[in-house]
Image 1 (cartoon, rainbow over the protein chains, first blue to last red):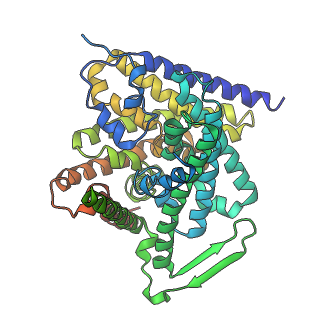
Image 2 (cartoon, rainbow over the protein chains, first blue to last red; image 1 turned 90 degrees about the vertical axis):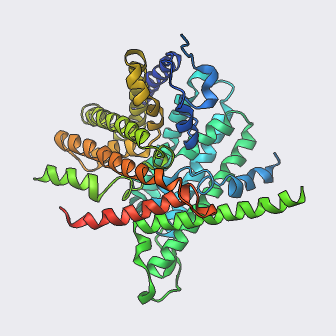
Length: 63
Length: 214
Length: 190
């Protein structure tokens, strides 16, 4: 029993994060934000949602 | 990439500390003595290798859109396990490293390698890459710690973290010539800058003969 | 005046970059222009302040009563990450100008040591709610301050004649060393 509560809690939080991340990924970013890749690439932080390696997953708004 | 090339890549050319500037927070803070530095690097190697293996084993099952959350959950769980083990078996090292053990979670090296390598390669290659990068981190932080401890206290000492037995304790510089600046943040920054510049010189020296030959 | 000395010491004496070495990644990567430093600082302040209060509340009212203190690390990092994603989504939808100013730095902040540090430190030092508020506000202000000063220096450093091996990040580290020395002189303030 004492394993189930933390596992459920972990699963719940993980689910919240995963859904927030997914929703954010699918929200288009407003146009005119192009100098982003500079700051992301310099840190080599590929978890950054705007990192060039994630380009194909991001929906962009073009008007 | 052959196995050896994988390993040596993480040690020199893509050294996570001095070439890629990843994981700087822990490197600068923990490098005051070599006991702390080695303890920290063992923890990082364990977390890095095991997380690489797990993520590589699961890479076909994880949906590509939510891979970052999954990585973070895996890494956070691993770090907490390592932290609790350290708290139990090496309490003095645990107190010395303090908040930097939980901060391994946000160490850019681990997440970066998981994303760049483990998600695309086999379990064996990912494990080797984890060990290679971990050894590169160890080399970087060890050099920094050795220089800092040598100049700040004049002695190099290593303590067995499990039973606090002294492995060696050599006084090289007499006390009146030590420079306490190296124990402070400013000294850490300066030493890091010099070592990074030296690596840059080494890399450029390696490139010049190649260019002249071609 | 304990709250005030907590505030001052978190900004100047135990400055999170120059004394605790946390938040180095954006320090190296985002500090080339003063405008981007300001944007980064603003985003970091916002994230640290609100996420630390949320994690403090969660620890006090959920983890402690249920005896799940060992879940603190995982809980905190997931809360911080979710908060950043939600905030970025809200800014994207409702304020493109704010997104241009702040939002592009938000993803960088998830893996910033400083955010997790403040969350953990609030618990480790046993701060009350008011002390957490003060500390969670002071630390990112110190971060922003150092980032702005550093970016101003770096703008000039980029066009100076630096020896080749030291160009870029190494000389930036030396500047950080001098700044750390300067700030450590304020140690007797409180």
